[in-house]
Image (cartoon, rainbow, N blue to C red; front, top):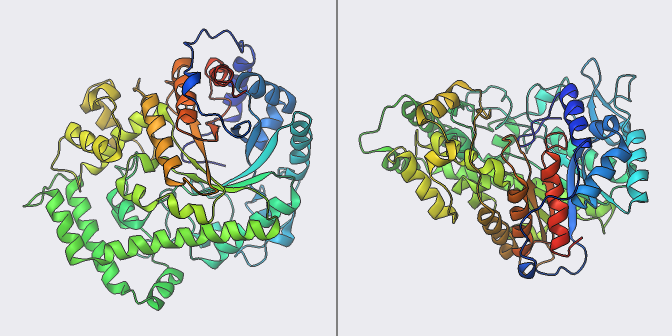
Length: 510
């Protein structure tokens, strides 16, 4: 399974990296003392989660894996990428429990000889975690990266402005497609009834069509504005029933496509990029209508996810992963208002990865500097971002740590969503604190808790034991009740993972 933030290693690479990790010591880091006196005392032991894939754990060795993450990082909860369905060798839709997947647009088949035996693997992992007093959360994130491995899955995907089936991220399955909703419903029931899970987390790293047309996400500068979505029959029928004029919506997005393409070609509008963008909104208010329609559909699906899980097992914690783009795109941040989640989320896991955040911010700045904010220099735009997002971080040139021409040429030459190579800077622990505190404040007074997603060596290998210590301390100082470690175990350098455990002990949280 492939994800936006967690680019998986090949089987050969992860075994090699895992072997290196196994040889490293787990203590004696010599880190500066964490600010224990500033960390709040939670009602009980904090949740210390770790994201992992079932096949990786099986191949690495279940006990070896669990011993390592417990000894180094005091992990007490596994967040398992454990999709209960997948492809067989021929690309058919297969699952151990076909009875849960009726009317999903594909014929569910039982496991074949080449299929992952998830029930057996989960039983072994569960038995090992129970012996250690650990919990397991099922981590259900959309697989909207290429290639689509299940034959027929494309029929669940969105339709773009020009009537084409969308490709990978930022596209994905249509939120209003009944087959997709039935697929997710089946996966929820399968996960809860078939496996001994202690919680459920849903993730969807996507945003509305206005932001997608603008390329308003990190590494989105080579996106196609005509590929924004969704304009399928399910969406347009639902929208018409709500009084939305689809013809006017499409006219607005056609005009926006022209605007974005001209900006990418360096053709500055007569009155500037920002003024012209506002002219588009004034002449085509349907752009915002369609953005809201998409965002509301996502919320609707999240509510269904929560309600179904609670109907099956009322006491099961159910939460949502929040895409890292909420730290870069103000429009997406507005969409992802945390307060409404308090009605249908027991916990939220906002991504506060410090180590890739700086380069992700500069790549976002580069992308939107070609349209809506094209009147500003890169540094002016970054300063604007820091002001509206409430950050205080390094300059554009300090982050990229190489000539601008080199960095931006790399962004143009890479595929959409690809990260360039380089010795990029990090965001500080202050960023982690501010983003975590913002989430904690938003849900204050509700039952919803915050378990911040802390990144270690995520894509960019620039984490250090000191930066990890700062991030962990910042999360708890901000009032979070837990954290979830990312990216893959194979990618994390052992000394950085060990910094988690040593910091938690210093804070008297482990």
